[in-house]
Length: 285
Image (cartoon, rainbow, N blue to C red; front, side):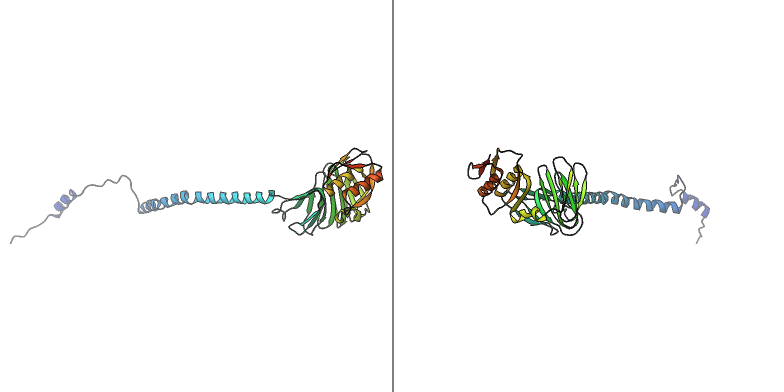
Protein backbone atom coordinates (compact mmCIF):
# COMPACT_ATOMS: atom_id res chain seq x y z
CA UNK A 1 0.00 0.00 0.00
CA UNK A 2 1.27 3.38 -0.94
CA UNK A 3 1.19 6.17 1.58
CA UNK A 4 -0.26 9.51 0.57
CA UNK A 5 1.36 12.68 1.77
CA UNK A 6 -0.14 16.21 2.10
CA UNK A 7 1.41 19.58 1.68
CA UNK A 8 -0.35 21.70 4.31
CA UNK A 9 0.89 24.96 2.90
CA UNK A 10 -0.82 24.21 -0.39
CA UNK A 11 -4.04 23.14 1.30
CA UNK A 12 -4.12 26.34 3.36
CA UNK A 13 -3.78 28.40 0.24
CA UNK A 14 -6.63 26.56 -1.45
CA UNK A 15 -8.95 27.00 1.56
CA UNK A 16 -8.35 30.71 1.59
CA UNK A 17 -9.95 30.90 -1.85
CA UNK A 18 -13.09 29.12 -0.54
CA UNK A 19 -14.19 31.96 1.86
CA UNK A 20 -15.18 35.49 0.81
CA UNK A 21 -13.20 38.37 2.00
CA UNK A 22 -14.76 40.65 4.67
CA UNK A 23 -14.05 44.30 4.31
CA UNK A 24 -14.21 46.16 7.66
CA UNK A 25 -14.72 49.78 6.76
CA UNK A 26 -13.91 51.09 10.26
CA UNK A 27 -12.43 49.47 13.35
CA UNK A 28 -14.81 48.85 16.28
CA UNK A 29 -14.14 47.66 19.80
CA UNK A 30 -16.23 45.40 21.99
CA UNK A 31 -17.25 48.36 24.17
CA UNK A 32 -18.46 50.30 21.14
CA UNK A 33 -20.57 47.37 20.02
CA UNK A 34 -22.26 47.06 23.44
CA UNK A 35 -23.01 50.79 23.67
CA UNK A 36 -24.57 50.68 20.22
CA UNK A 37 -26.78 47.70 21.10
CA UNK A 38 -27.92 49.17 24.42
CA UNK A 39 -28.81 52.46 22.75
CA UNK A 40 -30.96 50.71 20.13
CA UNK A 41 -32.77 48.72 22.83
CA UNK A 42 -33.54 51.67 25.17
CA UNK A 43 -34.44 54.35 22.61
CA UNK A 44 -37.96 53.05 21.68
CA UNK A 45 -38.89 52.77 25.36
CA UNK A 46 -38.12 56.48 25.96
CA UNK A 47 -40.22 57.54 22.99
CA UNK A 48 -43.17 55.43 24.15
CA UNK A 49 -43.29 57.13 27.58
CA UNK A 50 -43.07 60.62 26.14
CA UNK A 51 -45.94 60.22 23.71
CA UNK A 52 -48.39 58.07 25.70
CA UNK A 53 -48.37 59.12 29.39
CA UNK A 54 -47.49 62.81 29.45
CA UNK A 55 -50.40 64.09 27.27
CA UNK A 56 -52.96 62.30 29.49
CA UNK A 57 -51.27 63.68 32.60
CA UNK A 58 -51.47 67.23 31.25
CA UNK A 59 -55.15 66.76 30.39
CA UNK A 60 -55.90 65.42 33.88
CA UNK A 61 -54.13 68.35 35.56
CA UNK A 62 -55.94 70.89 33.35
CA UNK A 63 -59.30 69.26 34.06
CA UNK A 64 -58.65 69.31 37.80
CA UNK A 65 -57.71 73.00 37.75
CA UNK A 66 -60.79 73.82 35.70
CA UNK A 67 -63.02 71.96 38.18
CA UNK A 68 -61.43 73.71 41.18
CA UNK A 69 -61.84 77.14 39.58
CA UNK A 70 -65.43 76.36 38.65
CA UNK A 71 -66.35 75.24 42.16
CA UNK A 72 -64.62 78.29 43.65
CA UNK A 73 -66.60 80.58 41.36
CA UNK A 74 -69.88 78.93 42.33
CA UNK A 75 -69.06 79.18 46.03
CA UNK A 76 -67.99 82.81 45.82
CA UNK A 77 -70.65 84.28 43.53
CA UNK A 78 -73.77 82.22 44.26
CA UNK A 79 -76.14 84.39 46.33
CA UNK A 80 -79.21 83.87 48.44
CA UNK A 81 -81.81 86.62 48.89
CA UNK A 82 -84.15 86.99 51.86
CA UNK A 83 -86.95 89.51 51.36
CA UNK A 84 -89.62 90.72 53.76
CA UNK A 85 -92.51 92.26 51.77
CA UNK A 86 -94.68 95.21 52.82
CA UNK A 87 -96.91 94.47 55.77
CA UNK A 88 -94.66 91.70 57.14
CA UNK A 89 -91.65 91.15 59.39
CA UNK A 90 -89.33 88.22 58.79
CA UNK A 91 -86.55 86.66 60.87
CA UNK A 92 -83.96 84.00 59.98
CA UNK A 93 -80.54 82.60 60.92
CA UNK A 94 -77.34 82.77 58.91
CA UNK A 95 -75.04 79.70 58.55
CA UNK A 96 -73.09 80.68 61.70
CA UNK A 97 -76.34 81.03 63.73
CA UNK A 98 -76.24 84.83 63.59
CA UNK A 99 -79.79 86.17 63.82
CA UNK A 100 -81.40 88.77 61.55
CA UNK A 101 -84.89 90.24 61.81
CA UNK A 102 -86.15 92.20 58.80
CA UNK A 103 -88.61 95.08 58.93
CA UNK A 104 -91.21 95.42 56.17
CA UNK A 105 -89.88 95.94 52.61
CA UNK A 106 -86.34 94.89 53.52
CA UNK A 107 -83.91 92.73 51.57
CA UNK A 108 -80.75 90.89 52.66
CA UNK A 109 -78.37 89.17 50.23
CA UNK A 110 -75.46 86.89 51.19
CA UNK A 111 -73.21 84.13 49.78
CA UNK A 112 -74.12 80.88 51.61
CA UNK A 113 -71.22 78.76 50.25
CA UNK A 114 -68.63 81.50 50.78
CA UNK A 115 -70.01 82.66 54.12
CA UNK A 116 -67.54 80.74 56.30
CA UNK A 117 -64.66 82.44 54.48
CA UNK A 118 -66.16 85.96 54.48
CA UNK A 119 -69.15 86.80 56.70
CA UNK A 120 -70.65 89.52 54.52
CA UNK A 121 -74.28 90.48 53.87
CA UNK A 122 -75.86 93.28 51.84
CA UNK A 123 -78.80 95.17 53.31
CA UNK A 124 -81.49 97.33 51.72
CA UNK A 125 -84.09 98.44 54.26
CA UNK A 126 -84.08 98.05 58.05
CA UNK A 127 -82.94 95.10 60.12
CA UNK A 128 -81.92 94.04 63.60
CA UNK A 129 -78.75 91.95 63.85
CA UNK A 130 -77.49 89.69 66.63
CA UNK A 131 -74.13 88.40 65.41
CA UNK A 132 -72.41 85.28 66.72
CA UNK A 133 -68.80 85.81 67.82
CA UNK A 134 -66.20 84.89 65.21
CA UNK A 135 -64.22 86.53 62.46
CA UNK A 136 -65.26 89.91 61.06
CA UNK A 137 -68.93 90.31 60.13
CA UNK A 138 -69.71 92.98 57.52
CA UNK A 139 -72.99 94.60 56.45
CA UNK A 140 -72.77 96.50 53.16
CA UNK A 141 -75.37 99.11 52.18
CA UNK A 142 -75.69 101.76 49.51
CA UNK A 143 -74.30 104.60 51.62
CA UNK A 144 -72.27 102.92 54.34
CA UNK A 145 -70.60 99.81 55.67
CA UNK A 146 -70.80 98.32 59.17
CA UNK A 147 -68.27 95.84 60.59
CA UNK A 148 -68.42 93.92 63.88
CA UNK A 149 -67.00 90.79 65.53
CA UNK A 150 -69.90 89.73 67.74
CA UNK A 151 -72.61 92.12 68.86
CA UNK A 152 -76.20 93.32 68.35
CA UNK A 153 -77.22 96.41 66.44
CA UNK A 154 -79.85 97.98 64.18
CA UNK A 155 -79.33 99.38 60.67
CA UNK A 156 -81.76 101.65 58.84
CA UNK A 157 -80.80 102.00 55.17
CA UNK A 158 -83.49 103.50 52.96
CA UNK A 159 -83.10 105.98 50.12
CA UNK A 160 -80.61 108.65 51.23
CA UNK A 161 -80.76 107.88 54.96
CA UNK A 162 -78.38 105.49 56.72
CA UNK A 163 -78.47 105.04 60.51
CA UNK A 164 -76.66 102.48 62.68
CA UNK A 165 -77.43 101.99 66.39
CA UNK A 166 -75.26 99.79 68.62
CA UNK A 167 -76.94 97.76 71.40
CA UNK A 168 -74.10 95.52 72.62
CA UNK A 169 -70.41 95.13 71.79
CA UNK A 170 -68.62 97.41 69.31
CA UNK A 171 -69.72 98.50 65.83
CA UNK A 172 -67.61 100.33 63.25
CA UNK A 173 -69.49 102.45 60.71
CA UNK A 174 -67.78 103.66 57.52
CA UNK A 175 -69.14 106.20 55.03
CA UNK A 176 -68.89 105.08 51.40
CA UNK A 177 -68.85 108.70 50.22
CA UNK A 178 -66.27 110.45 52.41
CA UNK A 179 -64.38 107.53 54.00
CA UNK A 180 -65.32 108.78 57.47
CA UNK A 181 -65.65 106.15 60.17
CA UNK A 182 -66.70 105.95 63.80
CA UNK A 183 -66.56 103.17 66.42
CA UNK A 184 -69.83 102.84 68.31
CA UNK A 185 -70.34 101.53 71.83
CA UNK A 186 -73.70 100.44 73.31
CA UNK A 187 -76.48 103.06 73.04
CA UNK A 188 -74.51 105.13 70.50
CA UNK A 189 -75.68 105.97 67.01
CA UNK A 190 -74.12 107.12 63.75
CA UNK A 191 -76.06 108.35 60.74
CA UNK A 192 -75.46 109.67 57.24
CA UNK A 193 -77.87 112.31 55.99
CA UNK A 194 -78.25 113.84 52.53
CA UNK A 195 -75.18 116.05 53.10
CA UNK A 196 -72.96 112.95 53.33
CA UNK A 197 -71.50 113.99 56.70
CA UNK A 198 -71.31 111.44 59.52
CA UNK A 199 -73.50 112.46 62.48
CA UNK A 200 -72.83 110.95 65.90
CA UNK A 201 -75.36 110.67 68.76
CA UNK A 202 -74.48 109.48 72.25
CA UNK A 203 -76.93 107.95 74.75
CA UNK A 204 -79.79 107.21 72.34
CA UNK A 205 -82.85 105.37 73.59
CA UNK A 206 -82.21 101.89 72.24
CA UNK A 207 -85.74 100.76 73.10
CA UNK A 208 -87.17 103.40 70.78
CA UNK A 209 -84.87 102.35 67.92
CA UNK A 210 -85.81 98.69 68.00
CA UNK A 211 -89.47 99.22 68.97
CA UNK A 212 -90.50 98.20 65.44
CA UNK A 213 -89.70 94.61 66.42
CA UNK A 214 -92.66 94.85 68.82
CA UNK A 215 -94.86 96.52 66.17
CA UNK A 216 -94.54 99.87 67.91
CA UNK A 217 -93.38 102.86 65.82
CA UNK A 218 -91.95 105.89 67.59
CA UNK A 219 -91.00 109.17 65.87
CA UNK A 220 -89.22 112.25 67.19
CA UNK A 221 -89.20 115.24 64.86
CA UNK A 222 -89.51 112.96 61.82
CA UNK A 223 -90.58 114.36 58.46
CA UNK A 224 -94.21 113.65 57.68
CA UNK A 225 -93.14 112.08 54.38
CA UNK A 226 -91.04 109.42 56.17
CA UNK A 227 -93.90 108.73 58.58
CA UNK A 228 -96.35 108.22 55.71
CA UNK A 229 -93.86 105.92 53.97
CA UNK A 230 -93.54 103.84 57.15
CA UNK A 231 -97.30 103.50 57.39
CA UNK A 232 -97.38 102.32 53.76
CA UNK A 233 -94.73 99.68 54.50
CA UNK A 234 -96.30 98.36 57.68
CA UNK A 235 -99.85 98.11 56.31
CA UNK A 236 -99.04 97.35 52.65
CA UNK A 237 -101.20 100.23 51.40
CA UNK A 238 -100.78 103.13 48.95
CA UNK A 239 -100.96 106.71 50.24
CA UNK A 240 -100.98 109.73 47.98
CA UNK A 241 -99.56 112.87 49.61
CA UNK A 242 -100.57 116.49 48.84
CA UNK A 243 -99.89 118.13 52.20
CA UNK A 244 -96.89 120.27 53.18
CA UNK A 245 -93.78 118.01 52.99
CA UNK A 246 -91.97 120.27 55.47
CA UNK A 247 -94.19 119.14 58.37
CA UNK A 248 -92.58 117.07 61.15
CA UNK A 249 -94.20 114.52 63.43
CA UNK A 250 -93.45 113.49 67.01
CA UNK A 251 -95.51 110.63 68.36
CA UNK A 252 -96.05 106.91 68.09
CA UNK A 253 -98.54 104.31 66.99
CA UNK A 254 -99.01 100.58 67.40
CA UNK A 255 -99.79 98.18 64.61
CA UNK A 256 -102.66 96.92 66.73
CA UNK A 257 -104.53 99.94 65.29
CA UNK A 258 -106.07 99.82 61.82
CA UNK A 259 -104.52 101.83 59.01
CA UNK A 260 -107.46 104.28 59.16
CA UNK A 261 -106.95 104.81 62.89
CA UNK A 262 -103.22 105.45 62.38
CA UNK A 263 -103.80 107.94 59.56
CA UNK A 264 -106.40 109.73 61.67
CA UNK A 265 -103.95 109.90 64.59
CA UNK A 266 -101.10 111.34 62.53
CA UNK A 267 -103.17 113.71 60.39
CA UNK A 268 -105.14 115.15 63.32
CA UNK A 269 -101.94 116.01 65.22
CA UNK A 270 -100.58 117.83 62.14
CA UNK A 271 -103.81 119.62 61.19
CA UNK A 272 -104.23 117.81 57.88
CA UNK A 273 -106.81 115.34 56.59
CA UNK A 274 -107.04 112.12 54.61
CA UNK A 275 -109.63 110.35 52.52
CA UNK A 276 -110.14 106.77 51.37
CA UNK A 277 -109.75 106.37 47.62
CA UNK A 278 -110.36 102.60 47.55
CA UNK A 279 -109.88 99.57 49.77
CA UNK A 280 -106.11 100.02 50.14
CA UNK A 281 -105.52 103.48 48.62
CA UNK A 282 -105.62 106.74 50.60
CA UNK A 283 -104.93 110.40 50.00
CA UNK A 284 -103.40 112.73 52.60
CA UNK A 285 -104.00 116.46 51.95
